[in-house]
Length: 312
Image 1 (cartoon, rainbow, N blue to C red):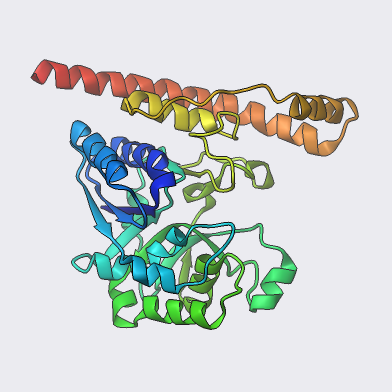
Image 2: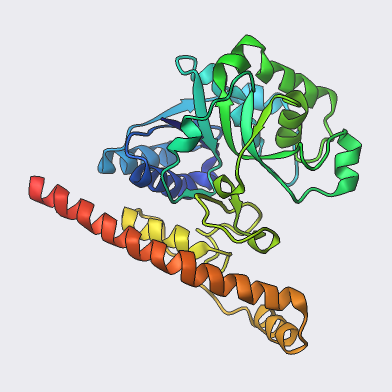
């Protein structure tokens, strides 16, 4: 199983936890990190962390000049384009699972690895949160548009059909695309996308928008990252993997958000459905997923450490 992530220096803490979480749940996985602006110190941290756990991880670098050609965004780093170069950077592989550096894998995902992609270029999860006006503007329907945070990439077909180059040319010709890399992938791969279950790209920040489920990959999309803000939704899962991995990522302070607390209490007292729905979902995931998963993770990590100690 080939798992790839990409990012710049800001995503090094996230990628450390992502790799560990994917590895402890998928021990046969081989990892690649696409360097799209990681400092030498960051590269060293990542590789030392993986060596300490016996994780097979290689760092490959995308040419900064290629990234610099693509449209800049005030909201996102040019590192978002790195996934477009994976087929060329991993020329010896026929497929890869791409996962954003702000995600946690909390289960076996071999089902993704063994998907029958057929002639499809990519597999992904429907985004589900795009505004109709935006979708009309780009000529896609809600049931066509996927989120690019988790992708199963048919690298053979991408190379054969020069999909990466087509995507780049689209970006250059339409520099004002919203969600540029993601939208360009959707447009170029249109009608050649295999749609997979939301549990493989579970949006932590918007989890109340979708039916309750047991997520397999939690995606902390949005401005609040769990390595910076412990109050971000489902941050407990990230923090548990951070803890058992023994990483040097400091635990963020929870802080006290009085305005948020007051708004929630007032919403509940005024019987506003939004706040009661949030409470219902929060209690559900806390009891059915977060607490039991963290308990099982710590027990498994303890058994692994015990086995390694006995071998030593």
